[in-house]
Image 1 (cartoon, rainbow, N blue to C red):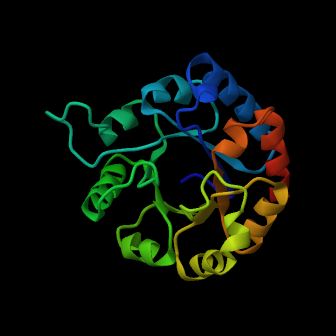
Image 2 (cartoon, helix red, strand yellow):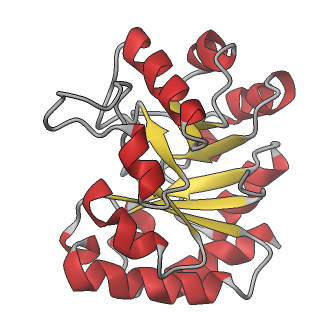
Length: 219
């Protein structure tokens, strides 16, 4: 299991994270993370997982995984293919890739079947509780209304973060609107085991400097 605290960066499919630019950024973030006690996790397009996982020291996960078995399923991202690419896990049910309840369960089970760590994205404690019985490895709490904005989930919804940390037996990462080291500190003080960000890093004028700034919030 990836050790907490965790700093998860979702590369999404921005121009700054595709091709050589994306890999060069990953190398720089990986190097910077080595000087901290924080586990860096990069969520990347499954097309590039193999090239990332074999050259980076940090954990590399897929942005999505389907719950089906290997077989006649053209276009599906099966967990078995991720495992063979030395992938560490996958996001599940991200706000930009929402799944049905049945699909969520199948994706979690597919990760378990292949010893992959599942990062289940939820937007409420109620949704988290619905799926904890299936034992995802991590819960990623993101208020979907705040994603990409400037208001931190730690400022707008501190009570729910605290409740998740207190009542769930699964490590909780929080995201949405996290822009400063103070946002990070507040999230951790509420009981979070880490953070997840995307645009705060990938759209920054100096992504590595921004990463180091947010990383300081873990101290």
